[in-house]
Length: 361
Image (cartoon, rainbow, N blue to C red; front, top):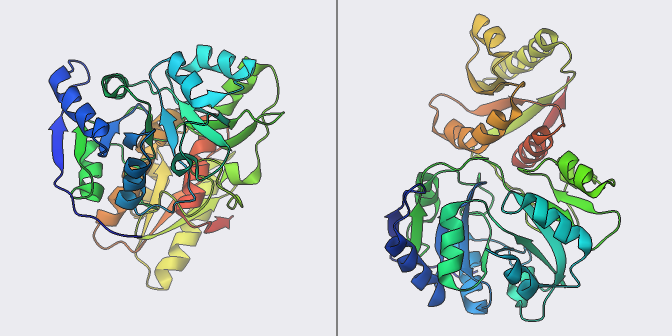
């Protein structure tokens, strides 16, 4: 894939007091076929005009993203949904009324006007309405739906701050809208509504249990949605290829979380065996188990409390980026978390980021 060099403009915007002139400047870049990195409530996205195939190609080039990995179309109104998708089922409308704007993406049958570059040539399209005032203002001022994956180099941890975007994409995109830290820290939940029962393609900021409650039916959760292997075909982002990965080695240590003291003891055994081989480790742990590592003199970084998995999810990607910056560390050993609520999204991201390097104790 060809490479690029672009004069990047970084524009800082206060999401609580949006300067509309800044948004209009970024929207003009979208309209003229450029690329704009912008905040959503989940992570930062890298967007282009959905209806401009050449602009969409620039997103793939900037990220060094495989062309068979489709994008998500971001909209600001239900009217735009019907521009993008056809044969929209009542279930989609029901979920949209309940969860949009918010961290939920629906896979639907695409409208003819959506170019194949957006959907990797497939007949389906992923659509969501983000719950971030800057994102919604940008889509509205651009006058078109915006096709966007996360605003990072392909394979790297998704960006949760404007600084992360600058590190990955400065000189590769036209505009970066920096509005500070995102809220959720993991991407949106993707549900395939072209099948019955619906299928979870990627867990994210909206727990699948909430989708099931709203629909009153089961949502199928295939192994790849748990981060246990890759899908054969990428119907939506996050299903194929290694994602979210730090540059340093990452290992997930899974076990029985009922007795945290016993579980932490087993993680310590793993880490000490690695240290005996000359590996300089750090443990990524919950707040509850951090005292056990501290007592044993083992280096650790807290992800957050198991009792509030939202904090763990929010800290996940920035912690993956942090371990690359830690001196005297060769590898990170991350605790596993229960696959309930946002815990499923945490484990999906962690397993994929590790390249499926998992130790069960």
